Each structure stands twice: as structure tokens, then as C-alpha cells.
Length: 402
Image (cartoon, rainbow, N blue to C red):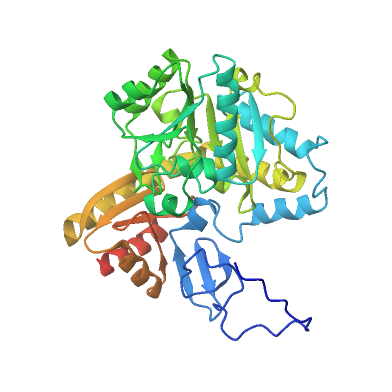
């Protein structure tokens, strides 16, 4: 390794003329556009061009842009405490935890800063709980097509060979199995497995909606063998499927649910919801976070949770989402350029002829933002406030491209 070059002290240079020439580490291949403001379901670039947004910050901006209620909540939060650390309790964090418990299966909540952290924490909690049942009980099982994060534990549970290979060896004791009941029946050993983690809708894995009967079978298997069932609802939770939590539609009660993305309206926050049985196994000092559930972010999240749990909002997502799916099937029939349509609520994917990257790029030039979920799947995650008229305009652009 060569010694680093010591740079002389200089005055800060003027901003570069090319906004894409960045000092940010190049872990993302960014689109050739810079957004400067947003309104409703639209983003605007520096030249004032409008883009209809079917990405929503990758399922984060559920309330769209420049939302009056969200802005008011942020302004009110600024007048309160920003940060105290988790050495002390604050009212916003306590209120948010109570709200999540009241609206879910959970008895306790742990706050963190992101989805990957939520899943890492859930793995730790599962192992801590499992140790009370037997010293050999530690393995984490994930499913084919899963995406649970890019930290070392979550990367081991993420089914992306290109993401995993440069960072081997990965965390041991984490394995991926097919979405097959017979294979999982054999893999879910009561003696060694601590937890099974499942996305009810595999967003990054191609927008694959897992069958509700399959989820019920997994719940029965894990319950009978004292294995914690963790549901990763980081992308599909908080109303995106038409119920506040996706697990509600399968009629099951998990042991833990991990959340993030829309929970704080674009501010960084994650959460782990858990039963009292899991929580009772966690002792002081077993886990921690400096920023998780801080008063500023929790104040904003409380507003978002109330908005996204509104029955009228959830009915809109269910009804409009079903309509959106029907439109996609009709486009598939008219164009002959879509192999398969998958999705529910406001999370949809289409397998296209050709590459998803081509459709994403062409859509950008025409003022529509979509993203990919694999080489051939175009993914759509509109803000939950999008109207049928707005969605129809985006679908018309998509059909033109196809």
C-alpha cells in the first residue's frame, strides 16, 4: 500500500461547473440529472423540467414532495430537542413507540437509523433469544431472491452474488434457501436455527409477492420449532401494500418486523418491532445506537405514521393499486413487450423484453422516473398520494417506450 499524499492547505475551491463531478465515493452510478425541488409526485431539475416520480426515493417518499403536513411537523420538531442520546428518554420517542405498538402485533420497539441496521439488530435479538433455548441455536435462514442490506450480517442474507463476492468471507451462520416448503422444512432445524427472515414482497428481488398461504405455512413451521420469524417490511411496509403492514394480509403474527424507508418522511430512521418473548431476552448493553429514535426524527415519524395508518389512505392504496395492476396487464397485452406483471398496492414490477436499464434510461429522457429490480424487471414505487390521473400519465409514457 502506497503512503497517502499529504495535500497542502488551500482555500476551498469554487464549485465545479459539472455537478456530476463529485467528491462523493462512487458506489452509485447516478443518473445524469440533478433535482433541485419537488412538489406532489413530481421532481424538478435545475432547468425546471418536471419528472413524474414512480421511484419515491426507493419507497421512502410516501407522502410525495413539499407536503404541507410533513413540513409543518418538521418545523415544529425544530423547535424541540434535536438530540440527547439514548442515555435519556424523550417524549417523541416514547410516543412513537407507543403508536407503533398500538397499531401492530408488537410489545416493544427498538429504533435505529436504517433498514440494514434494523435487520442486523433483528439478527442479534434472534440469536440472543435463541440462546435461552439452547447454545447450538444460532443460524439465520433467508430466502432466494432476498435483499436485506449490505452490512456484513445482512449481506450474508442477501441473494446477490455480485454484491457478496468482493467481501467474502461473509458472516458465518447465515444461509439462503429456495422459496420451497419442502426444502425449508428440511433446513429449519429446531436444534440449530434461531430465525427465518422473509420479505412478504421481495422488492429488490423482482417485486415478487409471496403467497399468503406460503407465509402461513412458514409461520406454522417456525412456531412449532421455536424459531423466530422475522418479516422484513422495510420496502413493502407502512401502507405500500394497502394495509399498514404487509403481514396483516396473510393473517399471521410474526416475532419481529423490521421497518425503515418511509417511516420518518425522508429522514433516516429504522425500527424493529418485537414480541414480549423476544424483548424479555434482551438485557442492558446487548445493543445500542447513538442516534436511533432521537426526538427530532421521532417527532416527524409520529406524523408520518398517523398519516399512513389513516384508513382512507390505505383504502386509496388498495383500490388504486388494484387499478394500476390492471392497467399494467392491459399494456402487456397491447404491446407484447412485457413477459410478466407482478405486484400489489403501490409496488409493481414488470419483466420486459430487452433490459430494464434501457427502459429506465428512456423513461428519464421523457420525464418519468422508474427503477430496476434486476436485469429485466422495471420497478414502480409511486408515492402513496399519487392519483389515478397522475399514474395514468406515467403509464402512458411507459407504454410509448415499450
